[in-house]
Image (cartoon, rainbow over all chains, first blue to last red; front, side, top):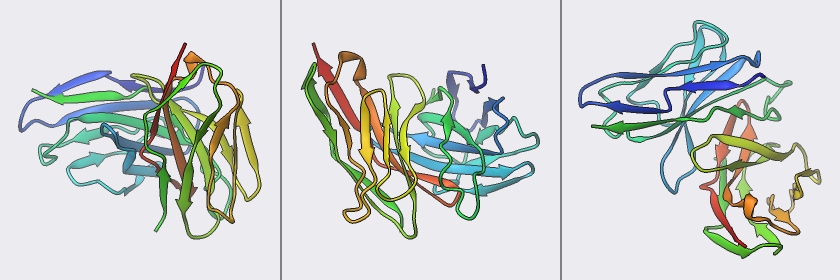
Length: 118
Length: 110
């Protein structure tokens, strides 16, 4: 079955440490996204990528970095510059959709990674 | 800018009760609208969508109609089940991104 795989499910970070969250999809989707979810809040966009080797900052990109070397993969690194990294991180993907707005394509989500600080 | 406002929860209902979760939006242009559902410890699943005014999205007994005149996309279900207990997110799609509401917790009691 096609889908999005996020790993690990739980991750712990020490102070001053960078950690990388994995996201892989086999849906042949062009676009991939990373969101952060905090209790009682909606999802906030961290980074997104529409095509390989290209990505854009979302609303809360500070302290995070990404790469998009393959269509199937979009790893997220939480750097030591992110002062409040404890959250639930969700990866999503979608087709790019039709011109001109690409807005009618739903996003498919992985099961998330919960990051905590030791 | 683009934003989504959902009714605050939690919403607590008895089994077989009627459900309404209100969602209103602010947007430029002509966005698509979505409802997603999240079960504990999981990611979001698409519940339904509507891409233009007066479209009705429906799935698993849930319905929502894209109302441009009231900028609303309220979620309804005629008879809820315990298994519908989850967090429901309204979202607006524009360009190549989604903007989410804060989510509404639904608890259904047997």
